[in-house]
Length: 307
Image (cartoon, rainbow, N blue to C red):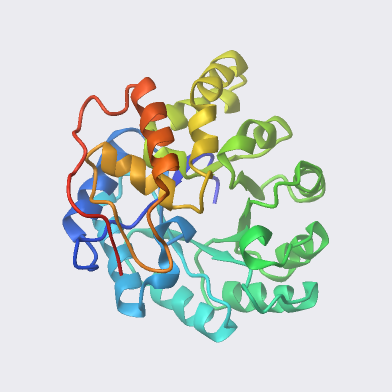
């Protein structure tokens, strides 16, 4: 897998009754592609995936793949804290036409050792032929995937093709970029660290803010990759406060709030996700307004609901 650029970790739109809004998801994924994003990630953390049952999880991936229609690659998130379930999900996702890679995160809550993570990720990768991208997200999983373990995994399973790095540790990222084969792709999993990761040799970004500004983020990452740093820095400066604002409360609450303001979907959540506070909502609305993001779509009115 030789993919560089910016991919969106898509949100999942819900209807007011808590069901998946298939039409909103399809239209949203198409808009992402038409806006110039490089690839789409269905059923990552931003998708509220832990609240989806197995049937809904497959449904979301299929809809995104249908909307992409082969124009950009689709990655499928197949994370779980039970290895056998993660393996089953990887096998199921790999059968969906249009899915070109799988993303799988550290097992959460179990807090496995490095050896436990090694065996978990190896089992997932060996169950499929598609490229597998590891996802290191210790802030949510309570388990860091160390560079030495990643290097062992690359040796053990040749289809492990990259990693989404969300440790927030640029030294760790740099160590991995230095030690891993040149063909191994390291993606920033944090919008605010993207240019730093690219500066030390990273391959791209798996983004939250690109749900809102897909074209702009794709342009920023492509600019950095071709060493047009003035352009990349200008875009980063313009949107940096919004990047921060989207993590003022637990994601994807803030990004869904902004998308509702833009008219892209209703502001509906599944518990334990809840709406952002009134203060955060006002702050995000002011930022989005200053950036001109609210011009082309009125906010969808109505009660905010959680299920």
